[in-house]
Length: 248
Image (cartoon, rainbow, N blue to C red; front, side, top):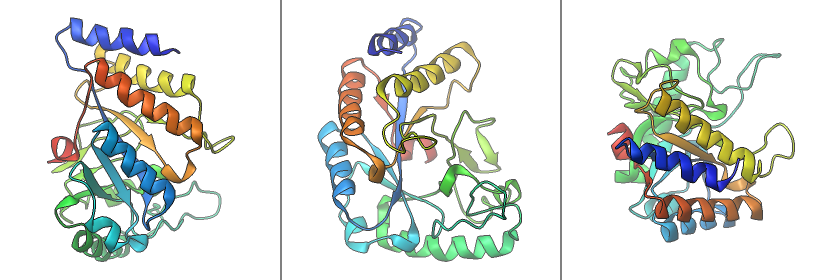
């Protein structure tokens, strides 16, 4: 998959009178560090809205209180601790946990994060490892969450009454191998694939194509890819949406 393939797909959208759109979520934020500083500087210099998924247990008030206007804060679980049973895939919110206990933990963590982030905070849960018990999801609306963000094409626009689902679709980290940048070609393939599915009806056409990053895992190739991607999409007339547009 090449940059030309992305350019051609964006052109197909425009020829149909449709605006190709994306959004950007970065996970595992907490305390200030050089990688996070570089991420925020990239968002600023590229003028691309960033949805920063912050782990409440690791949140730093100084960091959250000084974020740029283009940065929104989502809730990345509570403490990023794996509570799955032996043999199960990692999850902070596994099926085996009682919903009441998880909701109490979420409420306490959310209160702390919201107090630190202020107006930058959106009541959107981005669960660690992108996994959450379906039973717990049914309670999110009553717990005052307005959104849920996981990975892969969504099945429906609302995961529960009043809870907007907007996922990510292109994870640039190779978790199963190097745990570094997945590579330019695979990253572009994931983005183009979701755009094609949206355009052709294989996926929800109204769900913005989501870019997923993890600043702590970025090598120089990952940073270079993001810089080029943001310049490329801007020059191609594509738009990155804000958390307010997606979940507000």
